Image (tube, rainbow, N blue to C red; front, side, top):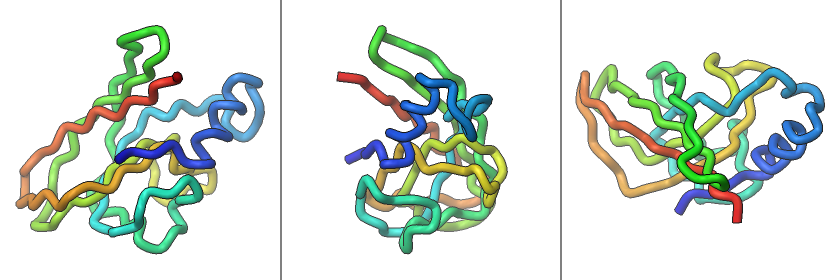
Length: 128
């Protein structure tokens, strides 16, 4: 299951109102992790179990495949052996940025990767 977090909901309102601190930010970055935090609307990067891996976040390609669907696609490349269990969409490329927000978060069955293995993530937000 994938969940829109509280920070994600706040981001949508801020974007609609062009409100600070996110007036110039797009949620176009994807990252992955090895933690086990259950999907919860209150998840943030400070939530125990939201565990970001060593790899850099990637800038996703944004598209709007339907009038009510916002899509971000990015490919992550492993720099070592690990079991990937999480993916998310965020507004900052830099880890630890003071304005980083965890917008869309997914926990899934472990996907083992080795150095140079890749996973392409497609993360959609569908307004219904």
